[in-house]
Length: 205
Ligand code: GRF
Image 1 (cartoon, rainbow, N blue to C red):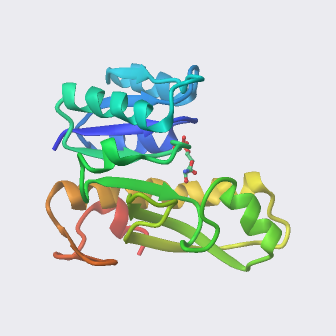
Image 2 (image 1 turned 45 degrees about the vertical axis):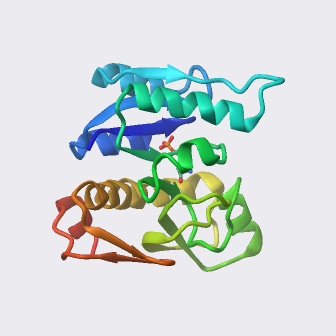
């Protein structure tokens, strides 16, 4: 499968996907001058920036994004640090083939600033969720989750650093499972049809 990775930040998850050997054929960022674009360039992966423009609504934005994905013959998509809600033109083109990584145990703390929401709420345990993307906000069927303890003196930076270690294992494992047809979706339930064998995932269990 040829993958696109949608980004908007540092790109550490993009780096983890590339390290895991996923066939990434296109990177699209909704922001210019982000670290993810440098990571794509260093890896020799084509990268494009699609900036939101005043006067162009989200549907028009996603129609253009979908046409870029089509031109690049993309089969499946990962959103990693992509801070936009995907709309019908993209979602309908890739049913069950879009993954998102989110730094909380969904359905807790969906949306922006999940780590700040987590710390403000005072929960003792949080974690990472990888889920299939549907039309809602961080609401699609859950593919993988792993818990991370919150320390009393955690700051957004310290908690984020521990969550990212988990993201970099969970996201490539989920992407490979989808790539190899090892995920079966039954309503809200995603079943891994074969025992997970990907080394980066197993080492964390
Ligand atoms: C990740 O922590 C992810 O959970 C969130 O945005 C961050 C992106 O990080 N959606 P990076 O750009 O992959 O380093």
